[in-house]
Image (cartoon, rainbow, N blue to C red; front, side, top):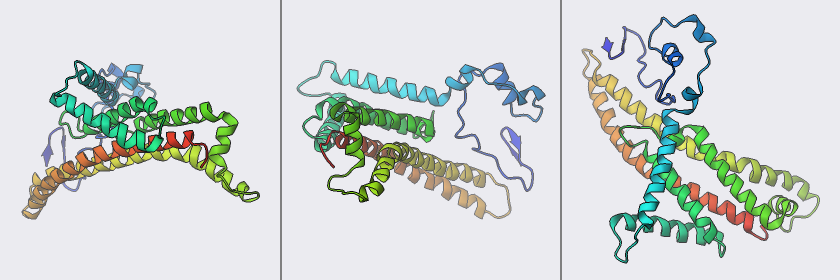
Length: 289
């Protein structure tokens, strides 16, 4: 059975979508093109070939992240330029997002000193939701944070921020005591609680923060890919049993419902990440736990 790019023989497993999560260089080197060609005749030297810096760093997913940052910067520059008493649609959207993060997240969670953290939280929320929506855009069809490195990179920024806030306010030793010794805990229980608190606040937090963002987007994109790719294969499958084709149509229709769900997930993940960042900053600023 023939398909674009390869031939599927009887009994073979279809290979659609196997590279859907792969990063691809925008300007591939000659070596990359040769060693990644869709052919069985791969030269022996490809076993020891090393990609160039452009193959590693100038990829489609890094381009998405950079493009997302440019979109966020451009959006907020447009929103804040020549603001009017009667706002335009763009200004209204910007004010809605700003007030939601400022009042509903920063002020409610951090407290009186929330003002200085609002720009970071607004920028983070905007950047995450734009990159999440790349998974719905037909030219990209991949959420940037479905690559775990990007998610943990953002988690690292949060990790640096709340630890820097805590050390600046309490000093290094005071901050370590605040984060590892809950108020009212007496010896010898503290010998059991302190290591758990240290592990929870300094190791588990950044890992779970990034993993939560990555895993939800990865699973969502994988689910969409399964229904779209599997549905396409079943629709075009030539067999005397039309049930395959009907199932394929149902699968493709169901993928639209998943796309709609992904729009909601894109917003929720950005909002949850921002809330958790604000709560960690609040905990670092607190006088006691």
